[in-house]
Amino acid sequence: MNTRDKHFETLSIHAGGEDRNPKNALNYPIFMTSAFEFDSLEHADATFGFETQDYVYTRGNNPTLKVLEERMAVLEGGAASVAFASGMAAISSVLMSLLKPGDEVVAHRMLYGSAWDFIKNILPQYGVGSRLVDLTNIADLADQITARTKVVYFETPVNPSLEIIDIAAVCDIARAKGAKVVVDNTFATPFFQRPMELGADVVVHSATKYISGHGDVIAGIAVAKDEDYASELKFGCMCEFGGVMSPFTGWLLLRGLKTLALRMRQHEKNALAVARYLEQHPRVNRVYYPGLPSSPGYDTAKAQMSGFGGMVSFDIDGTLPQSKQVVNSMRLFKLAVSLGDCESLVQHPFAMTHRGYTEEEISAAGLTPSMVRLSVGLEHQDDLIADLEQALSVMG
Ligand SMILES: *Cc1c(COP(=O)(O)O)cnc(C)c1O
Image (cartoon, protein in one colour):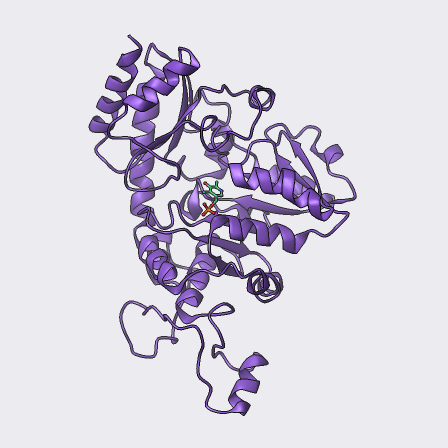
């Protein structure tokens, strides 16, 4: 299929996996097998030497995962991608593959909790330095990237602050300094944002979230601009660390991708309604949503994204215990980590996922410990707003 002249909605259903399906099933089968049988030692030899398209062992390659990898590469505009057991397996493997002792990673100061821990606490144990900076303000970035800096890493929109980082601007500065840029595109998905088209070298995803869309898997994907690097990541890193995705998970993600465009549009529509509702609520101090014109990231988001996504955070006009009471009072928004599911979810980042951050780090990032984060789902927006209304009313 010529993918260049097709739209996202078509590619998310059809891209990848051509002429590889041995039983002409309309939907690509799940190849639940550890190993693949060879006809002879000669066949094995040719396959180990990459002279055939055949398979050896699912930790290295699997037909179902191959279709997913091809489809994700097309959707992100990359050369190739690698499927991982989790978003963290993708993130840790990508960082380990690009950094060696003596190198340094520059990352945004606010990150997904486990990515922050990996960069701040684990990489230094292997001689890799980390420097956490404010990438929403890049005036000093050129000075913060040193000769040792090999990777610049960030998410945009940022979890849970929903800040927006200017991907093209960061990539320009990093490229001039010889550093690779890795962007976590989990919140936006390739439907709303394609970082590689703006200069990023690698895009990582927690496919657990919107790409699955149904809250029933743990999965990760890394998409690379360079085909040789993707191959090195797969056969020289994923295969050795062993964080491979199950073929069953890959099949569920292929199913999730078919409705990604539809779901993302509806998530955004509901999120915008929720953000507007919260913005006018007398007991809400601040709403963090890049789609509100009052948001500091609005102009950049409008320029680099085709939609603002489904994540909304807010601060109540009240105390920390009151913010916990509001969260405890929600009924339709389920109290759970994760995001991107059909169900609306609520969590309290600094009591839950971001508890590793100190008060100083939270306020240095311009946030409050009582911030509430919503993953706005696909329910009717009136029901979601009614739930927020009753939960906020407990403050009196
Ligand atoms: C969930 C998440 C991750 C980690 O992904 P897992 O699939 O849970 O390992 C990384 N980045 C972001 C932005 C996330 O939301």
